[in-house]
Amino acid sequence: MPSVPSTKESPVKSPVCPHAGKLLSHSNGDAKLREGSFPLNGIEKLTVVQNPEDSSKTIQINTKNASPERKWIRPDLPSRCTWSLGASKADSPHTQFPVAPTILPDILHRIGDTPMVRINKIPKVFGLKCELLAKCEYFNAGGSVKDRISLRMVEDAERAGILKPGDTIIEPTSGNTGIGLALAAAVKGYRCIIVMPEKMSMEKVDVLRALGAEIVRTPTSARFDSPESHVGVAWRLKNEIPNSHILDQYRNPSNPLAHYDTTAEEILEQCDGKVDMLVVGAGTGGTITGVARKLKERCPNIKIVGVDPEGSILAEPEELNKTDKTQYEVEGIGYDFIPTVLDRSVVDAWYKSNDEESFNMSRMLIRDEGLLCGGSSGTAMAAAVNVAKELKEGQRCVVILPDSIRNYMSKFLSDKWMVQKGFLREEDLMVKKPWWWNLKLQGLNMSAPLTVLPTVTCQKTIKILKEKGFDQAPVVDDAGLILGMVTLGNMLSSILAGKIKLSDPVSKVLYKQFKQIRLTDNLGKLSRILETDHFALVVHEQIQCKCIGVPGALLKQMVFGVVTAVDLLNFVTGRERRERSMSESTDEL
Image (cartoon, rainbow, N blue to C red):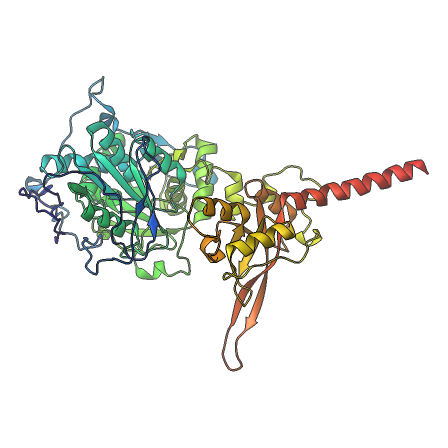
């Protein structure tokens, strides 16, 4: 497997195991991240959350000096693993682990040996005849199935002489592998830098920070092979920091080996060797590959079902992956490339999942079975209740639940978040609604909106907003299309911090994290938005036909107004005041 040369070649080049490509290491040197600039195409700034002693530092990445030569290893290279069904075990790199003692030497010994739990109510709801079991991986020390591979990758690298005291671990991850590595790094004394997309929850960031890891966030929309992606940024950091290593869950054979040696063996022991179907969500593919290989050796007639979210490309045949969706909310599964460690030949069938069924099933597992699981657990279980309908009475289906609710308290556990994302209906949550709840926004007295062009200076914009008595205004282009919002608070704080000058155009301080609402939406939806946001942008969609002879039309969003909590409160209290006044007048008569 090709490797990326480091700045200084390490004199020792030992493979992790017989199937592994080389993991890179630097010779001795200062393992401190150099403050300043280093090349990274297309990114102006990434914030690294440093250790608690100094959380204010940032890494400035200078795009002007970007190097044309990228030093990285693709995460989707062909696998070099020699495993095959029925092959001799004499050449196997797998390791047998002893039973843990009563008093554990450290928390890393609480990884593995997770419980298998029978699902009782949900099978009846969906009319299943088979026995449905859940392997609860969130009982691992770090809270997810990824603890297994994190520990295995670290210890394999240590045994190979690649990872040494004082070294730095860097990993691109959706969060759980990062938490597992940060946990191992905290116990073993390594420095740890985790690179993950912005989509991932703040709960994961907080846990990583608490474990002493440094965090870099990257754009969710960046392709995996882009320098701006979490993979690309991790390699940039690795090439900058002496004695740093990317253990690389996408390529590292220790990933599937951890599951072949432990997870699969536990399932077989807990089920007395009888498993008819296994349902697993696919991310890096290490879990489904490792477990499926072992189970197929011991249960030849088992059916392996892989679960892949809509918008991902892991499923086969390729026709299953055709969709207009490119983004999904479920974390930790699905990719826009095929990881090296994913062996799709051991998967008998694929199920394409969607966010709505995933999150609602997670909430059902919590409510009806008492399993405090995460979103991808709901994905796997939602697939299981569909595909397991083909199983008969006396047969058994095992579902792997990867992580817990801890990482998603502000996401699918929140009714507000579920409603905002369209996964729950507002009317399902309220027994009795106030009189104004279902009234349309059209009933509000909204004045003509004040809009600002992106070329207007910050100084002039501040003056206009103060004169008109507004705290914010939409920024639109010459055609009226919405580019973002500009707020007084954001402009003033940016100016005081020296990030912008009064003479800079407002395009430099655009605020894009705002909520939109339509005139046809009800005031109840607006009320939910205003519980967490200071304002909502009222938009009106227009269909713009193209030139004569050119087929098709464009759907454009135009600004209709900006509403705040004060506007809603004035509407509600104003009407109640008028009704009360009319009632008092009637009583006098």
